[in-house]
Amino acid sequence: MTTVAVRLPPELVAEVDRLVAEGVYRTRSEAFRTALENLIEAQRRRAFDESIITGYTRFPPIEPDAETIALAIRSIEEEAW
Image 1 (spheres, rainbow, N blue to C red):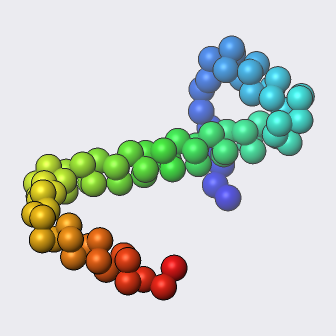
Image 2 (cartoon, rainbow, N blue to C red):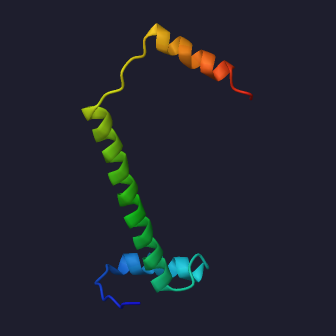
């Protein structure tokens, strides 16, 4: 692993130390690593959500007509549930 030096407010370090003391994390490094992994995952999910929204904005869903709905219902009824 790579070591990264950062400057943090004392209050933030105190909160991380409290989590370590409570056994939530084994070390400060584990706490910071987990926080960064969660931040990156949240950003990935946000980007994915935005791509879905963009897709629906560019190509909005089409309202099905009565025939399409009837075919869908028939198809479901024919399934061997």
